[in-house]
Amino acid sequence: MLYNYSISMKVLLTTTSFQDTPGPHHDKLKEAGFELVCERGPLTEARMLELVGDIDAFICGDDEITKAVVDQALPNLKVISKYGIGLDKIDVDYVTEKKIPLTFCPGVNHTTVAEHTFALLLALSRQLITEANHCAAGEWVRLTGNEIMGKTISVIGMGRIGKEVAIRANAFGMNVVGFDLYWDEEFAKQQNVKRCESIEEALSAGDVVSLHVNLTDETRDLINKESIIRMKDGVIILNCARGEIVNTDDLAHALNQGRVGGYGADVLDVEPPPSDHPLLHAKNTVITPHIGSRTYESVQRQAGMAADNLILALKGEKPRAQANDVPVTKYC
Image (cartoon, rainbow, N blue to C red; front, side):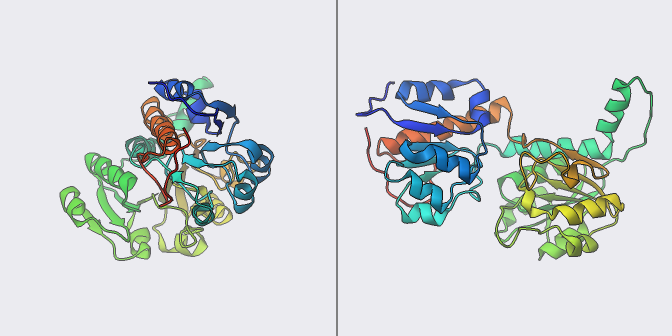
């Protein structure tokens, strides 16, 4: 179906996963007749300010959409379609104040991120990266790893992704404890997840701590010198949420001292990181470049929803998921 817009809409597309992965999401934008401005995000506020003056809509990733960016984009900006679920880089309150519909894509990447979480855990537990590098160098070095069966995993944040991690942990024979402000008792009973009454209790209980919380003022630097002291010696920490949830310097120090046994992360506080980023060179780390949701299956789900949300909002119809309560206006 072709969408006939009264004027050609200029759309800024920044998410590289959308751009790099083939699928019907590209056809949706083409059929809509948009004029696409493609950039390789995530973009800084400065770069956004250079681009947004005549842009009608965004399909954005983790770009900095600040008050200044919104002001620069108005009056042309009509819709912001977030690819993914994290809204911490967007000034949601100001976007809402300026009556700009903000859509997002919940429920499309939880299985993929949970699988990636376990890829990191297994890589650390069995020293797979080190062993593979030895073999690639022609070296037959046989290190001794650890099982994860019987270990306790603390899942911090029991939303969609945290629940999928709990399900997979059970399949591996792990003991699962969790913490969330909004506890799903029915799920916990079904999956034999023990509820911790506080984050502190959950952090101290786990041989493995897996982070699945949003970035807020309360969760920023959640993993720091003081919280690491409360954890088990040799704990493995997994982070497929946001890099700013950990204090980089504190964690790097704990890794290098052996207090933390391993860190598997798909996110860093600076992306892409400088070559001297402390966690890139700390002991027993496996860092991946924010690809936890970047599978062909997940990208097509996310990109399809992001494209649908944009098109529906511009048509004045209800998007598949909206992050604020601004009424949509018909522009076609």
